[in-house]
Length: 248
Image (cartoon, helix red, strand yellow):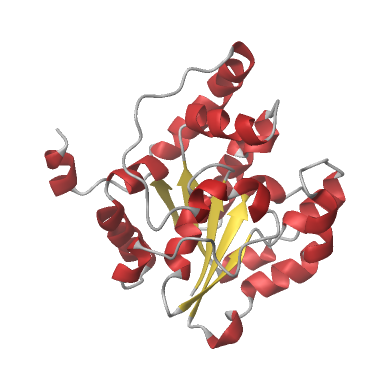
């Protein structure tokens, strides 16, 4: 099984990659289209030149690898994708060869976290618009499109990972709940800039608190992203009843 996990930045996406990477039956790939995205867009991201040099700037070659069997003889292949990396014109024929999951997070939390790493984000930087567009394309093609909210994973990691595995036809593995501190061998070269918190972790953090207060510019951006988040959240996997009852 090849899994395309579609996310925006600061969405719990690296921790979820570590969860699947902790399984013996999975190989994982960290943001395979990042080099092509930077090369084509010309954007000045942190570590831009190193990312392009370390990755494959040919999106066609990356797409073919996404549809191919997992590397290193693994039974399954987990691909952590940033939605905004799928620029117009990048081949999507490979979509039919993978199972699609969409990881969402409230935009206020995304923006508060992103702004600490890269100032003055735009709507396109955080991927909400692109995530909804990819979700619609997958569903229009008649393929399953599973949605899971990062807040639910943090609230009940085992229950939600079991629900996710069930939704994509995969056996749950308890190894998904823990990983060694210090990062994963498949981390992209950008990990030094973005992954400091998850590198200190050995499992999912606990439930999040109240939504953060945002300055006016970010609050305006949040208001634009919020309807998209709500549209996708309407399709999210339900929190198992026993977990909901425990938190009522």
